Length: 267
Length: 267
Image (cartoon, rainbow over all chains, first blue to last red; front, side):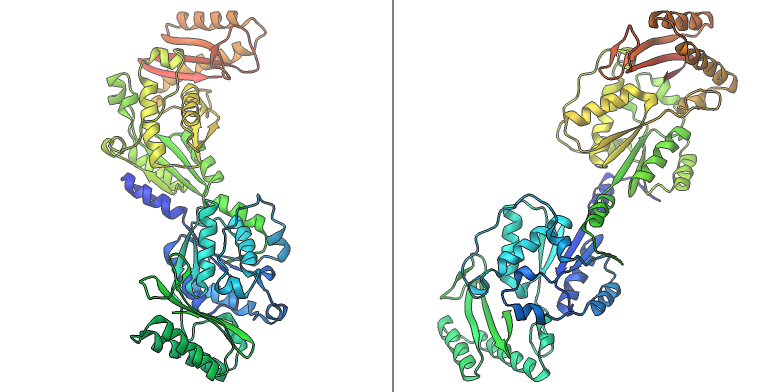
């Protein structure tokens, strides 16, 4: 029993009692996920992690079939990190959940929404359900999926969902490649190939040159290396418009393929 | 770590995470308080008990000065019952708390509000502050102070305060007397005297007689026993009107004095 004499203490206590964090994932947890989970555990009283491979957000059947599944490892990681609740729903469990229809934000036809038609509709559907099942105070999302993060934020804002999105920095391998569950589908030499591309972009970005020239250089590098890509864009992350000139909101986005595995990143 | 597969489980989990109960008291805890606390602990995830002798609700200075104070015993009881948080605020701590002015319900000038002018204004003032400091899901109040319970309920309703009042039955001594902190101010023989009155009323109520006759009999008994009293009334607890005929909402209320100690009860 704790004896309290100051109202202020109760005030902060109430905040902490009721503070819940939620990290929605599709499993195959890597250090990127771990950083989200650790942040949630640090900032909240109770942390929920969900693992659910959401078929509705896959635009390619083979991608869904091949998506890495490591449930036993994931459970071990969550236990090690002292996650309070791990939610492992079935498809039915997520999608038979009855609820009022929510409003969906308009999504600009750039980047992922342009090249993976229907992807974000699927993401919003699962977020709609999961955020209803787990109405946490904070949801932890990684900046690797920057556009997704932005869209979910818009969705919460539009529907007055009282969950704050906590943006978490991209976690990279020693070689510079952003961690991703899909990396598990690639051999070591392919991962190094991907890392070389990212490192080339990083170096290139630091140079003092017009933005358009930088993009041209990256595209040329990709073509010379015989790397397919969907886009190489500079986006203003405040208004999500394609930028021609560098501003303080500039961010460099890329989606490219290594052995048919699609990787995205932003710097 | 708990692994959950059903949304429903999370639903009830969320209710329990966020379920807080609050038992506001003026200390000198007895079995009546203990029953409130036990109920709160059973129904909630976290239980708050406050002990604060609220000067503003005393209409008689001597009553305030003589009000029993047993803080060490109270702390032991709370520890024994496994109360999570015991709030022991100072006067300043309660009343310097800044907040918007709330609306106060109209109180009918019967019973306590008639005989202890200003009492309920003081009660509402402290409830206004305490319910703001401890915004629990449920507040536990005993039916001995039935009118108070009703007024606080009206106050919460009027101000859309999201705290449900849980009415708890009167706990009585073996001899039939309702437990009250003020009982501690009376000698054993005086307590037996008070118990005899309550038992007389109980027996009398069970008899098949017009209500008015029953009240006359009680009043005569009090006068013959030289017991001062403020009121002996039959109240409809739904609309809080004085009743002339018995209904299913009838309740018998009494306020009487034993050696200048004012006792209230209802049956």
